[in-house]
Structure formats: C-alpha cells, structure tokens
Image (cartoon, rainbow over all chains, first blue to last red; front, side):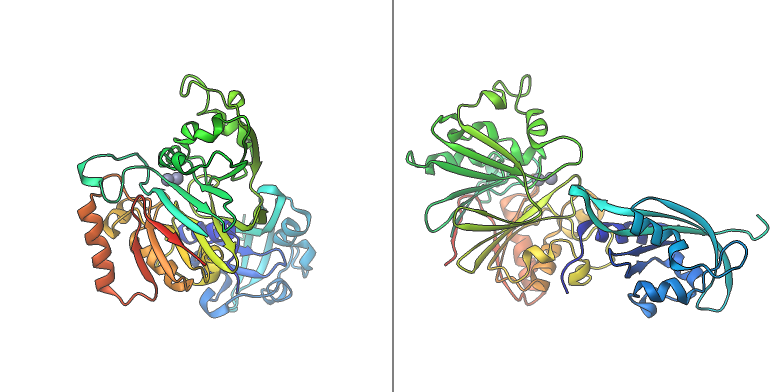
Length: 132
Length: 279
Ligand SMILES: [Zn+2]
Ligand SMILES: [Zn+2]
C-alpha cells in the first residue's frame, strides 16, 4: 500500500492529540481514521473498525435528521465537504455501534493541498445535549 | 550516479576543532549523472566547496532545494556558477500557497541581508515550483514529495539506470506518532525512501534530545534507522547533524545504534567530503 499524502498523515497526527472527536476520509470517502474521543461517540474502537468505505459509514450509524427522519448520505456534512469542497455544518442523530442513540453537532471541511490537490475531508463533532 | 557530501551539518554552520571530521558546513550534496549533469541538493554553506568541481564547459546546473530554511540556502549567493553569464541555472523549490519561489528567495538574496539581488546575478536563472510527482532533469529522473517539517518541505528521489538516491535532510517522521515507524501508509517519507540504494536522512538528535524538541522538524538517529529499515533501503547516510554534536559524540551515537540492533542496511555516518558511487 502506498504512503498517504503528508497532509492526511498530519491530520491523523493532529487528531490523535486533540480531545475533539475527529473523523478523516480520503478522496473516495473511505474512512481512514477516527481518534479516541470519536470512538466514545461512534461506539467502537478504530482499531476494531478499521478503514470503512463511504457506503458503510454513511449507513452503519443510522443517521437521522433533526426530525428523526433517515438522512441520506448527501445530507451528511462530511459528504458535502468532500463532494462540494466547502465546509458544512449540521446537527444529526446517530446510533453508535454500541447501540446508544446520540445527538451530534458536526462541522466538516475539505482537505485541499497546495496545487489544489483534493486529499479528502475531515469532520469534527460534539455530542449535544438533546434539550439544547 | 556520483554523490558527494559538501555540507552535512544542520541548522547552523559549526566550524571548530570538534567538528573537523563530520564537517561544519550546512546541507549541500553534489550529484553527477553518468553523463556529467550536475544536480545540487540544497544550497547550504557546503556549496562553496562544490565550486571547485564545476568545470568551465558546463552549460547547465540544477539546484533542488528541499525548503527555504536558512541552513539550506545560506550558500546560494556563493555558488560560483551564478556569476557566469554563459550558464543556465534551474532552481527548484517547494511550492507555497502564498509567494512564488523568487519572492521567497529574494527575502534573503537582497540588501541588507545580501549585497547582490537575485535579478542581478549574471547567470540565466530559472526558478521553478517543484512539481509534486516526477520530472526529468537531463538524464536523471526526479521524484519529489512533501515531508513532515515546519513549512512546505520536500524530499527528493533521484533515479538513474535503476539506481536510486533519496535525500530527506529535514524530516520528522516521529511527529505525533506513538512509535516509529507506524506503517508504510502512515509514515512520512516512506514512498520516497522505499527500496532506495542510498538514503541521506535527517539524524539530528539523540533520543533524549528529541523528547525535548518534538515538533521542531527533525529526527533522532533511531528514527532515521526505523524509516530506513521499514523502507528496505540498502544504505543509510546520517545527515543534518546538530551543531552541538562533536565528532566524538557522533561516532558514539553511530556505534550505539549499531550495538543496539541488527540493522538491515549499511549505516554510514555522513561526513563532509564523503563520496558515493551508484551504478
Ligand atoms: Zn535544515
Ligand atoms: Zn529546516
């Protein structure tokens, strides 16, 4: 397997230092990494989950919108950041792989390198109090 | 391909009685292809000694800069061929999102820091943002990729007739990694170094020094060895020695590394004036 782009390596390294949950995907949307704080919200350790194609991570957490209606992949901030190359933000509901429903605020942004190289995208997310 | 180390010191020129064997000049490596094409890797103070080897018939020179930290460009204005109007000098440097290479080099190569302006140099100077990926310089194939170091910084991989030299003088593959190397996919510099015959790599610190200076952009000798082992290189040349490291200390660090593990490559302590031949 070839080496990843340096910006993706640095993104993972930064994520591994932060207490904000972070999720990183490549240009195809393959989930490459999520950090330990993200493990707590997604309900599974990254080392167990491993890399995951986009069709899997966009459905496995059963994303739903604010009205609890199923959310198609195109409505997910990370997919928007990746496809449209713009930052995206939204509150969504998911069910972690530990079976626990959670209410998340997500901020996603594209990772673009020098020379306009598209490298992937990253999302930061927080659990929001459902009363908020 | 013939390779000569003209400057092996990192950060700051360090002349003195303690640095006689490893040398005090900063990063500069001469590469000659089989047909005599001259490629200069970085323009540290070692470049002054390279002047003597540049033959009067030479028509073209390539300077490949890994980045624009002072120790890698300080010798630039002292490179003799720049004062020869008959010579074409192609300078490659890492791309930046803000200023082009000329603007960034001019910050140093203009008064008051330097008396001569870049545009007043007699040679026919062409400045290029280095393409990330591959390109050709006469008979040599050059691959280039970004590596972990503060500010845009690249490493170079030069191939001729299937033999490969890799030059990564400033590199911190251990940044943020709990252990080094993690895996090829997640190791900065792996693609450049993989399977090379000769890897010239940052070996600035001891492990104790690295612990104090994580994030400064450099490697402990053990990190260089770990990358070399994972990438299956044939020979590792230590490089970019810390200005405070004496000849004796550098000897000891190399012996220590040889003693602690069976190295799957040849370990050569990089010393000024040392030459290698790849064929
Ligand atoms: Zn340096
Ligand atoms: Zn540097």
